[in-house]
Image (cartoon, rainbow over all chains, first blue to last red; front, side):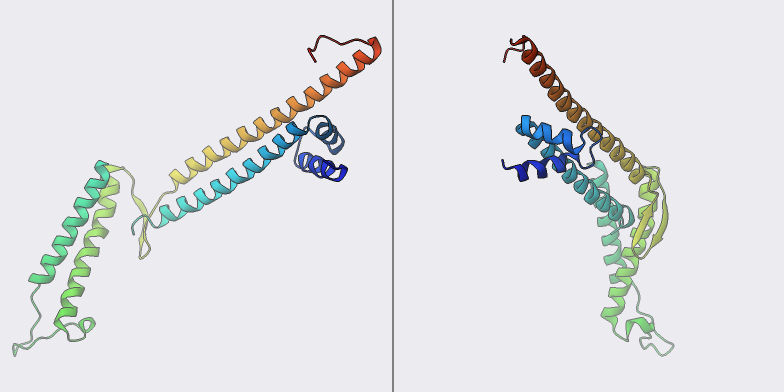
Length: 69
Length: 142
């Protein structure tokens, strides 16, 4: 992993994190790259689930209003 | 399962009633015995019968919807319009509460995972510092 890639990964981990700031995330990326990638994957999965929930909300809203037809 | 069966039964009954009403509905006539259809029928008996069928069918459904939800689910629609029956959004609110709980748990899990990884880094740093100062492995098994 290049220095640029490491910094990008660290920035992604540090974004919206209450635990990691950028420097701390960079240390994680350099020492435990697999764990760092796992954290990013977790974030992506959370985003996916949030989108699924949004779709479910929309379906429920329609079902409630148009229950009749 | 039983609910769906009941709905099928109600719709079937409504359809049968509509077809029977359509077939048996007398065609209005004037004093001279000539057909005197209402304006929406456009002077055509088949269209008149079709309109009677639609009227009876949707009338039955309009009646059946609040009866069904009221009797079986103890829930009445708050509004019935051309778009259908609108029910109180309690179910939606319950689902929203569940979603909020799930979101909070997910956030907590992420925080804990990040905290765990941070702690592991910290421990490694301490171990490295310790081994540097003592020039020997601390029992980490590495």
